[in-house]
Length: 569
Image 1 (cartoon, rainbow, N blue to C red):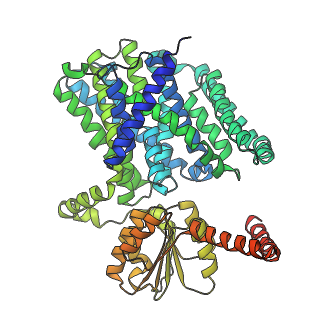
Image 2 (image 1 turned 90 degrees about the horizontal axis):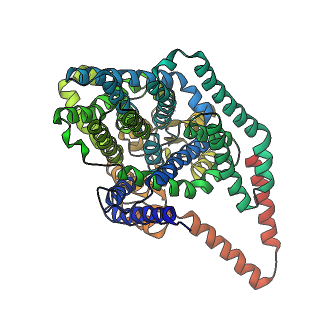
Image 3 (image 1 turned 90 degrees about the vertical axis):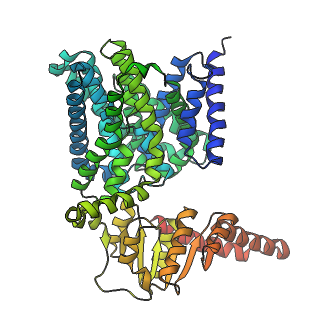
């Protein structure tokens, strides 16, 4: 029995795990650790992998599962609302970047077809990287998060169309090819619609009490769309995303997303380690000027193009910069384009290696750029105010302004609730009739629902000081923080206490360590929902064991069932 693939898979996972532990200790992004692990076990490093082709196939499956989970988490109606901005913006960026690179490369003496390849390689952004990082930062549901995902998905579809065209340009005028592609998409979309309306709700409802079958149904849905995509000559990553959308609007979508996350992370790790495995040193023969131009595109030109497109789409400058920083890097499809060009002799060995280097480095640096976006914005804003004061005084962000419902009167002695999740929604519903409240959340869908209910709400991040001014935190009586990020919550409490020492700050924590951190940062009271729940459970259990009476528990059951029916009706 040949166990080569199994051994190689073990090496990939073990190396990724070890480097992940090191990265965590050093407080570095896990994506960087996985790429470094790939470099270490690659031919350039210890040369531990003997079946790179099979690992590459598994890596492609990792991208498919990333898109499957983002499909589950996506609200298609929300993405559809942004369709014009997403489609026009993504096409504009690809055309602009490709045109700039094509002109620059031909100016330094590179041939047309090779310049065209380089332009497209640098034009596409990585869906896998941005989806993973947005998930880690809890920003997928933000307006700019949805815009980022939309741009990336349109680019993926465009890359899929361009791959066969670059291999055989004569297909550009083939109506049968275009019709076949459109038909394949419609078949996948129709099957997803049918599953969403007729089959999956009944199937999941029937087996939701059997975790093993529920999990297998989810996996089967993903693999079915992967198989159908391949059968229809459609990219499996787009098919996987459509499969995820088939689950997105169902009541089980949140549970489905949480169940599949382990499987997704397993294959995603293989993908990111495989990126590092593709790094080589053949780029040394390429002129430094060309390498600098390529890095200039991913670190300056792409972010600038996305910045202006996002401003035009209705985002504020801070959100627009985040979009630019998130999408500046090259894509997993860039690897595919580079491989195709090299295999067909359209891309030289040196340019191929240079492309791999730029793709990998730009991908590896993206988490840092996204995580430090506020510091970068603050630095650039200072420079902009000094040299371009007129532009900086202009107010952008029409779409974000619509996600706001704040009465014109100035609030005093009010309650500000930051984070309208399950706990935040319960508190908002309980207080809205008897107290003056203002809710804050970065999920555009939640904010829209609160606006429809005429509940004062502002769209924004917890640590956005501009949002603090809008909500009148300096005059507020109570601050309720229900966000899951303890670091951010602690920082907000500390800063708000400086501008309003009298405010009562109440926060939520997941564990004792987080609770202690919040108290050290001047929180007045910290709630631990799981601890409170277990204490209540122990109290009722002790009562039953001591008295043998079930009356109190039965009464609570009746009250809770009534409450659940009201909430689910």
